Length: 376
Image 1 (cartoon, rainbow, N blue to C red):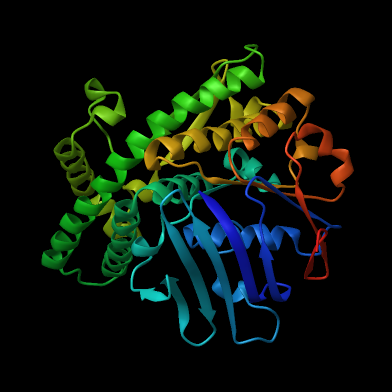
Image 2 (cartoon, rainbow, N blue to C red; image 1 turned 90 degrees about the horizontal axis):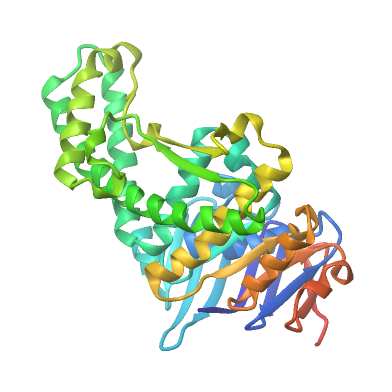
């Protein structure tokens, strides 16, 4: 899979940009605050329909503009897609595949896969559980359009249920209907999360062993708010009917509590991941360097896992992270991975990191929202 071109209009600090990317390595060079990260954010949005920096589309529009757009051409061995996202201040977001508007994001996501590694990835360990759930949702969604569908329906029904719980008196018949719908979509989410999580863990722990030279052992766990039958572990072995029964029972047990507080206390929207290094809580005891290595391991694991799920490698986006890595071993690992996938990196000084890459790059200078092709 290759992202061939990227076109921006009124996006962040870009009034207009149209560039052709190298099939192996493209490098955006510029000082901080010039728009390098904005370009990578646009590529991520083009793939997953979500930003890693904001939940508000309004933030993506250039100052004092009414609309913005991102467009890109994606090519595979036998496919070619023209993808476009429009952000309209008055009409919301619109998504297009080959000039045809799609009604649901589940029809859009999956035509381009990306893996972004950025300094913000430390929030995977330091941040709230919502950061880790968002990580799972974005990565699973790239390879499974049905996951996006079930997640969208779940969020919609969850909102309806929470509104109903705040009413007095509560319509119990409607609550039971919503509970069944929540169980249906939530159980599909959980089953797909469990399967993805098990494979991601296998890849990530292997990567961590390599990065740490077998000096430390990483373990990753999934904490569910729903009590599941532990005799059925691993989680990926749980049948959908078992998950549904457990979820349904959990909603029943917590109903009085939910009515009292006006919110739903169990479900995939309450789940979390945890990390252990040599059996100790990595969130509490790991150094910043160790936490960064865990985040790196997760991101590199995504590459092989997405290849396993889709049959193609994703585009690797490295947002000024080489300077953040602690030693040459980590840098060499990242750069060796970049040799088998299309890679886009940002840096303030290309000369400082160029020696790690064997492929000659296509260099772009970025200054005040203007991208200049150095070979033009």
